[in-house]
Image (cartoon, rainbow over all chains, first blue to last red; front, side):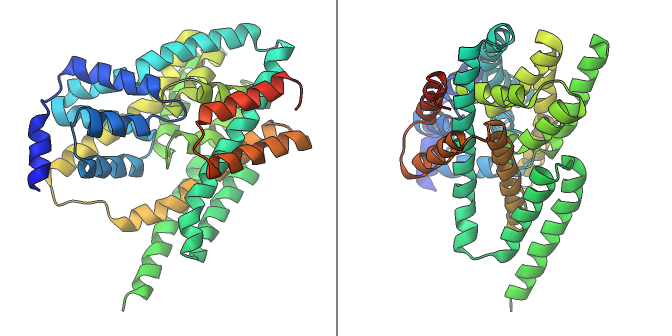
Length: 193
Length: 176
C-alpha cells in the first residue's frame, strides 16, 4: 500500500493536452493492438497508475462492450480530468490513426484493383487470419486446461450460430448472454458445498 | 440510396453494433461482414477481407476497420461517422459505469459475469478467424500460410507486423 501511494504521488496529474499526446503516441506505436503500449506508457513510463490500478481498469473495459482500448481511454481520461479529459484521451487515441487509415482508404479505392496489390493483400489476409487463429487458440487454452466442457460447448454454440449459420449478432447475444450467465451460476452453485 | 440515408445507416448500424461487441472490436467482425457484404452489398467478400487486413497493417486500435468500411460506403464523412458510431455509445457507457464504480468503491465486477462472457467472445473471435480464413482463399497454399502464421505466432515472439509482411511478400511473389 505504501509503495502504491508513493508511486502515485511521484507522478503529476496529467493535463488535457498531455492526455491527448500520450494517447496519440501509444496509438501510433500500436500495430495489431494498442493495449500493450498503453500499459507500458501509463504504468511504466508516466507512472499515472500502479499495475494493480491498470489491471482493474483494464478488467472493467474488457468487460464492457465495444473496443476495449477506446473504453480505457475514456475511463482513464475521466479519472484525471473529467469529461474534457475523456474527450482528449479518446481523440488522441483515434484521430491520428483515423487520418492515416483514411489516406490508406483513398489509396485502396484508387489502386485496390491493381493485380500486384490484390495478390499482396491476399497474402496479408492469410497472415491476419493466422493471427486471429492464434488469438483464439491462446484464449481457449485456460478453458481446455480446466476441462470445462460447459464453456467449450458455449464457445462452440456461439461459433456455429455466428460463424456457420451467420445469424445476426444481437438476437444471438440476447439469448446467449443470459443463458451463459445462468449456466455458470448453476455450475458454481453445484460446485460449492 | 441517397447520401444522407447512407450516413444514417452507417451511424445506426455501427452505433448498435458497438453495444453488442462483447470482447472488443475483433469479435464484431462477423457481424460487420454480415452487414457490409450480405445485407447491404456494400462490398465483396474480398474487399471486406482486404479492409480487415489494411486495418491490421496500420497503427491504432483494431476498431478502425469501420473507418475503412464507412469510407467505402460514403467517403470521408462516412469513415468519420462509422468510427464515431462504433466508439461513441460504448464510450458513454464506459464513462458512466466508471463514474458510478468510483462512488461505490467496494464494487467489483462479479467474476460470474466475466466467466460467462469469456466463452462468448472466444466463439465470436473464432468466427472472425474463420470468415477471414475463408476469404483468404480455398487453395491449399493459403491454408498452409494461415496455419503457419498461427503456429509461428504461438511459438515465437516475432512481431505480428513481420508476419503480415511475410504474407504480403508471398502474395506479391505469386505463391498464393
